[in-house]
Image (tube, rainbow, N blue to C red):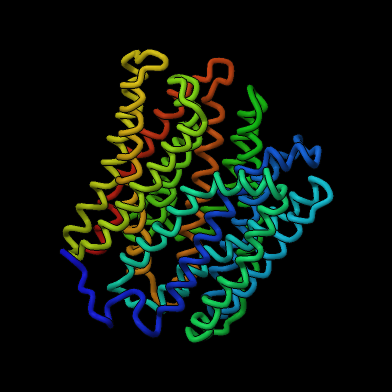
Amino acid sequence: MTVPTTGAERLFAPGRRAACGGAVALISMLAFESIAVATAMPAVAEALDGLPFYALAFGATLATSVLGMTAAGQLCDKRGPYRAALAGLAAFLAGLLLAGFAPSMPVLVLGRALQGLGSGVLGVTLYVGVAQVVPAALHPRMFAMFAGAWVVPGLVGPALASFLTAYLGWRSVFLTVAAAVPVAAGLMLPALRRVGAGTGEALQWGAMRWAVLASVGALVLHAASQQTGLRAAALFLTGLGLAGGAAALLLPAGSLRAARGLPAVIALRGLIAATFASAEAFLPLLLTHHFGWSLTQAGGALSAGAVTWSLGSAVQARVQRPAARRRLLTGGFALAAVGLGVVIAPLLGGGSTGSTGSAGWVLAGWAGVGLGIGLSFPMLSVLLLQLSAPEEQGRNTSSLQLSDALTSSAALALAGLLFDPATRQVLPVLLLALGLAVATTLLSPRARAMTS
């Protein structure tokens, strides 16, 4: 069923045009920063003689984003999204400038930590602020728009980052993103200011202590993925215990066991995010090592997944009947599982190295994974807002993104334990991703039960 497009029912109708345009600009900026920095980081580490800090430059960003998400949830509920957005933009911009002018790798890592703090705040603020500007009936389209904002950065980000690094130096990657921050802020902040403030109640600083524990757990999990043997296993179990213990206190009761309703929505978000993250991280290795693809070709495969993700998001936005959306949620999870099965099939069938036909099946399967997650991922965000009282949207959105970050960290750490660098065999990792996808499919009725 097609969404009506009368003026009052358009995303970019007067009154919310600036908020939606600002959201697209801000998400595209965050997406480009993530993709471009990952592309430029080898050159950064070489220029600053900082290879020992390479992994920490990524792990610090993830760890501080957990703090940002937790703080943003409270700030949005208690002070309103405008103040949270100001804080997030300030931290993100400060991190970009610090990294862009960093004289050494430790200083750059500090800049990356500030970027993570800011991006964690902004991720929650965008969901809460724009959701309060956009009518509930348009939330499916809003989250499809959020997914679409990743497509162009995903397609052009690596090439643009390589160009900037080659001709202007690696610092230009950070400073180019920094130059875009005022533009996005100018579009977003006036709209968020009109949303108004929250209840004005005191912030719960006790929750921040658990967020610190979760951040440490995420950092330890990241460290586990860089180790081998018993040391890796010990770090993994320690990080899992820290992150899991903190999550049990930060997330709504029942989230760790996917209890019906809101807890299941939050658990499913973590599981499907971990499915995609663990498979995506090792897909280029599969294509280059097993099938002999170039890095450019493997990057094209990842771009294909990004495009089908956006397509799936657009499709779900056009489905309005609740019963159809419930079926589509489970169908999206199932399609992701089937797609991963297609990716894995050539490995089980003994597909020969360099086989074009087998690699084609991998590409088709990955496109199916992207389509399935695109169908289901935005629906979880819509369900979360439906199941949240207005004064709880910040906290629950924070929980959704915390589940995403912590579950993905645990899955990537476990993938690192399963992966054998000597043989570069990725089948155990892909089987892990398949198991997660199957789990989301089986658990999905728990999320929709409360909205039947």
